[in-house]
Length: 284
Image (tube, rainbow, N blue to C red):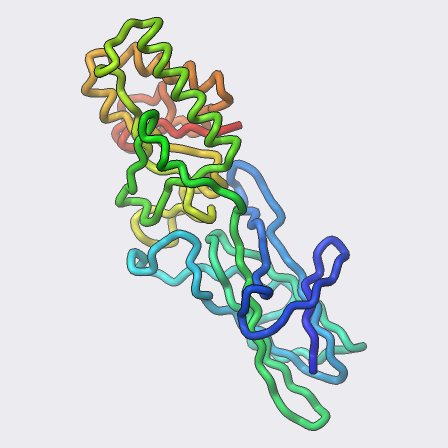
């Protein structure tokens, strides 16, 4: 029977067939143009004597944090960099290597391998599950005394997740903001605005899209380092200026910045109207 290996950093690991847990490939898509680049490819080695092989990509069961019912388009599947889909390839010298590049979305992709073996002539299919995701993102919804987490309609999915470092820094900044407002500015506790989030990252990272399709990337929310903080509650507060200045200083003190001008604290009125005026805070 033919054999398949994942090849990473010079190490080969044999993988089995038919989409069980041992087939899951942990990958870190680069999601180009975002806050940082990660490794975006994996290599597979197919070994068989005098065989031919054909590759096909399709959606796997796990969608990476979005509900399939909220989308109008199919999920991007990534691409095969070294061989075309649907084209048979003869394995020369007993082995053929395939490089796969992940798409912008987290979740499962099924790589179907169709083998044609010569002795005796017969065919066999094998499914390999490739799972692209950012590992170890944490659910932040258990911190309602410092921030509330809203599921915003324009971002269909659970945008409550952050990396451990970014999440801890955010909570430290919000705790500092709250303490300073009460103890230094002497704002009554009941008048201190508890910020609300308008989106961080999805459970497994990846494309945090807009308008319930896969065409708008909201790019920097893919990796767990970003959070949008809504301004509506601040706009109705009589302590608005003091609270926003305090929040801004606290976020900066704990390594948050505002890389998108149209979402930054000093956005113009025109920019605020376009974005709905939230602060896009990025953990450096």
